[in-house]
Image 1: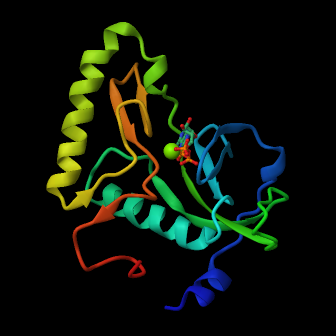
Image 2: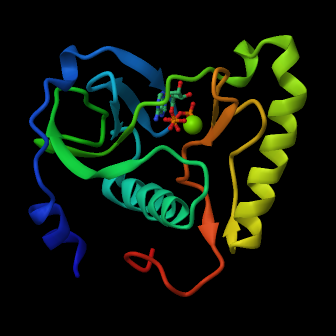
Length: 172
Ligand SMILES: Nc1ncnc2c1ncn2[C@@H]1O[C@H](COP(=O)(O)OP(=O)(O)OP(=O)(O)O)[C@@H](O)[C@H]1O
Ligand SMILES: [Mg+2]
């Protein structure tokens, strides 16, 4: 399928993104809370937001399907927003709707949770590598969320990851 037809056919998610609470802002875009259970990661900083979003979503979805610890990926959508970057004047911008993780980043862990976190982190990354994924831009202190009550670690943000396989969602 051509990217243009995917852009046209991607469903619109009717949310008031501009007035939602921001949870994070980074190199790829803006993450906002849609509900107590969902967040939307908008891709608006790159020149090619659709390609960036597809890369991220393809890996994210494959990781989820193989049972790796990632937020539930509900799907990708386009939304109307005023959030602009210089290169983008499109009416709609793409993003990923995913499970909201009520967790903390590495720097906010309780001292006593560090050994458990570190162990889990190494096992999780090893598990992904064994499955043919090539993790990038992920370190203990970056792109992970930890839920202390459940002692559960989640990996997030897969734009720079690659998969050692010819198969890819859109061959990108
Ligand atoms: N599923 C989620 N549930 C809760 N918070 C999230 C979720 N995904 C992302 N966040 C929050 O948003 C921040 C940015 O997310 P992410 O790393 O995916 O975006 P980014 O644009 O790549 O940011 P960066 O360039 O800083 O890595 C995270 O550090 C986290 O605080
Ligand atoms: Mg990130």
